[in-house]
Length: 424
Image 1 (spheres, rainbow, N blue to C red):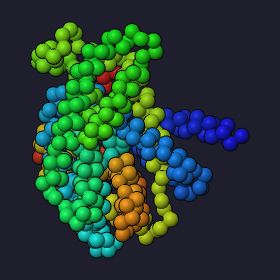
Image 2: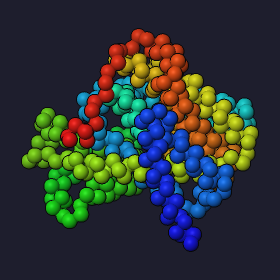
Image 3: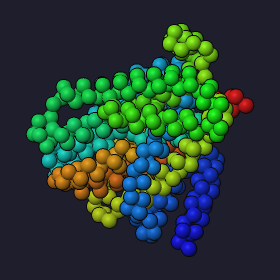
Image 4: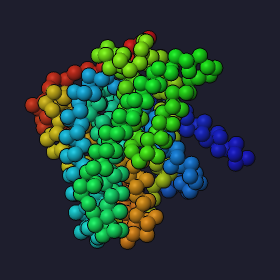
């Protein structure tokens, strides 16, 4: 009986996900927010489901969701736009991360009375933005290609920064010595080598894809190859997320590589990329995984300690306020004022922060439970604030305030048509 009820609930949630997506397209009320609210109701409020009910499957599911989201987003990136947005992405990532770490670590040191290294670690944990939130929002808000690419690249790069910096601080804290040079070397090697492996894997898969399609029921083989790539790169000690993004971006632009002669020298014959059916299949997977991911995030929230919950709200508000000067300083004037305004309110935290939050507690560090509770609160409120602010900046008079800040930026430009629609 319980099994039957659970299966029925899954079906209802799928219908609700489609309903919320329709509401978003008509009213700009983010489906992300509504899905998280469902999770909060099922978990912390009603107590019907707990994160422990999923066991090891929960983090596993979250990782798979993030990998496939990054891959699909990479496939739909235009190579020229990606190259043009690289400088803005790098500057925005560095500026936002440094400001976030400085602000959160200072507040944590004085308000939570954490030791300074652990305060900085908390700042690093919540210094990234979440691709799982960014990708659906940018797509449904009809942002231009340049702005969408900047946000996607920032979310992928900042995840790597958060993971490497937080774990390096943990190691330094335990050894009593944090080595900055080693830390910088780890970040650079993690990013560059992971990207190279992703690009090379895309060349190989393009060469194999025609033969793979001759197999029966082969439509899932490309996502399966992405999972293999992610696991292999992670086992080598590099970022599987960056590799998945680079793999998708290369495979989606394989014809451009072939035109400039790079691929032609490595692999003869016509380049092969995903066809329309394969793209639609991946898009459907992304939609369903992302929907259940946000419900799972809502279920995982810990709201029992109200002072720490409210501190999480305060930290999220600080991060939102700092995002505006970071965007104003970092972005190039070629980005449309509306797109720049939306970038300036997108500070959602997600999987990387939620996973890293448990590390101090697992290592029995002083204040580990506090770090985890505050981080979970920041994850929830940062997504809520991002959803609320994107609506206000896009649909209300607040838009004029942000447009004034970015008044010297470029003219509005329509986004590139969706590749699935373009091939219809």
